[in-house]
Image (cartoon, rainbow, N blue to C red; front, top):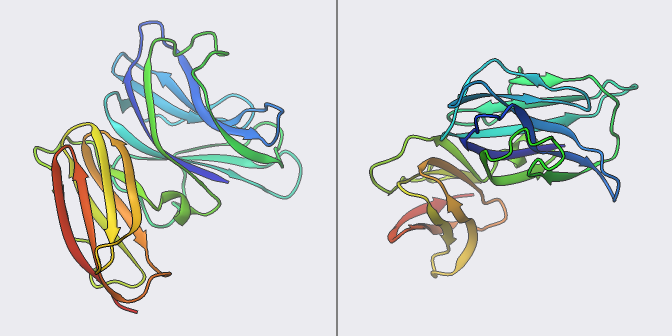
Length: 250
């Protein structure tokens, strides 16, 4: 079981220590939080990220910066035996590989196994003694899947650098079969849409339709269920609109 998402810590209060906002939960009405992504304050402008299974968290030593967007994947692996399942965390500062890295950013194995994982939770930290109270943490683009390709397919941030202009790049590869990717630049926070049209001008797929922070982004389209032909894709964001042509050849 995997979940992928973007995270940005905008501020950490003077009394902030460590805490979590997202992770896995047991299926059904029973609450049994696990595989939580932990944020541990290092300074007013930096923090570590960590992961737990059901016991204490294991942290990576990298100091991440506030006001910067990162892409994170959390994975729970079922392993035959008793109390030996593992939880792994992958953190990407720029780009996301198409295959799962051999070495995770951090992992944890301590604690009991959870054979009935089935939910993702978001928490404001109400039960953590206000460890992150008053701090500002934002999550976006949450995806849930059982394969690496599925959890990263969609939109991911390449760089949190704030572009001076909006721009939509040419898809690559082009022509393509059956998948292609797009790079685009967003200069300000706001609602962003990336839409696919057929040659008749009909909308056939909405890849993105949500608010995004400034940055350079990557999006994918898997078109195995569509026929060969000419297609168009359009980016719309805060008064900016640009449309480009692509060709699917099977």
